[in-house]
Image (cartoon, rainbow, N blue to C red; front, side, top):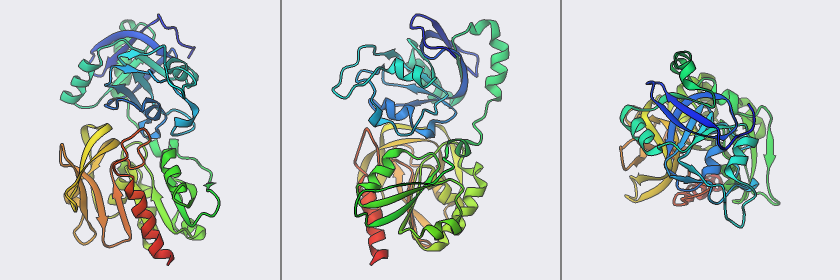
Length: 368
């Protein structure tokens, strides 16, 4: 793939054969992925560097992207994992005191093939009405290779997602006088999860996704965090089996997004693929205990089936206000609670950041 040519044509073709013609944005080439949309008005850099988007071509529904530029501090991981990127209009004159570059340069430097100047509103309506579907972005003539590309697009599947994005090494992060030790499982974690723990006095040991209960026991943490990540949760058979053993250690557990789903699967629950998922920073979630509704940041295509959680194991604690899907579980059989949304929400909203405080309190009780 070569660097972008701002005037070069680009094409998006969906699995149903529909073609959108636009302009190249980022690197040149051909990429295939699952086409999804996210509704965030801001946070596009966090979206581009969120490992949960592995294997996906991301559409931004907000019509202007790049207006405040990019900077090194807002990356959620060391690289981008998106397969491709779609925007209505890319801003070429960003303005912000933290700006270190533009969206085009960022996409090119990260070798991301993108397309702009297409009707993202029409594309979003197609996905909402028919469901998530595969697609291809190419800077070559799509019509001359349409049948060949359609065959590849329709055969595409997101596989081995967690295995691909997890780090194989252990890393430790802390500030002076850390009070608690937390093992953070890297299923494709966002950096701000780590930062939220560190600023609450935690020494955070980031471990590979396939870390076993025996290895966790050797670290001897006060708490365990199961992170977000990409792909079908049910694919991670080995990890699910590990979680069954890890929860027997009696250590306080907090799960987010994929971690929430994997914890449910380890306790007899089931998951399902949503029609078009929940992606964006404006998802309303109801806390069933307090009755309060919070605005949350989310990025997931699968959900836990709330009714599948055995009553003796735990209960649904939060639901999505729009479609009533499960957004949180309180476990009674083990020392754990999990949520589907992102309480760390770098880029906002911060309504549910209190859950990190709650997690710290559970460790306080154990330490005392």
